[in-house]
Length: 212
Image (cartoon, rainbow, N blue to C red; front, side):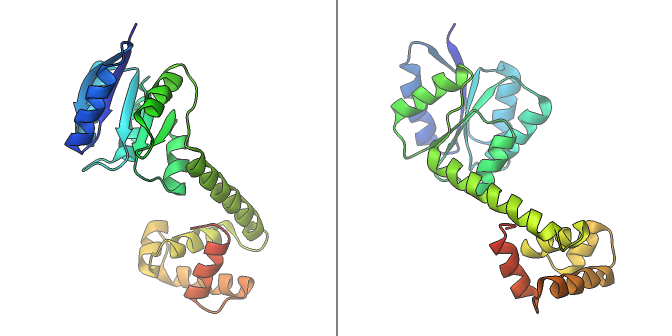
């Protein structure tokens, strides 16, 4: 039985080049070529391919949004993520969503073909540099969270995370369904416990602990 594949990339030349090269493999069958997230989801639902080769950056629903929907629907297709660059947070999210392979576009086509066969066989194929950076960041976050939990309440940590993500007090209040006054109280207590004087110092502390 051939390995049934759906391709998804918003660059026409990349998509056509991949299709041409993969069709030359006797054990590959390319079922569809998609240029955005919505087309990709329709093709996967229709064809139920063995492998989806998915570009991370696409218009509309990007690769991670497509992964989230496939994960939610529990479709059996295994995913190889194809990307020009992958930061730590994207890597962790992709792994959480069950991606089977991560391939950088700078890598050669034979490596992509090898990756597809490995992932189809049930193995993982992960680009070592991205995964190493992602795991380092995850470990820093876990260590930082443990350290902060010794002096801060869960709500104070939650407020700090939102501050570190650039949210203002009003936005934090709306997100957490509390008043702005309560947000200010949480921040004031956090300043005292962490021995920082302002929002900028709090952001630097959060960065040092791997929260952003």
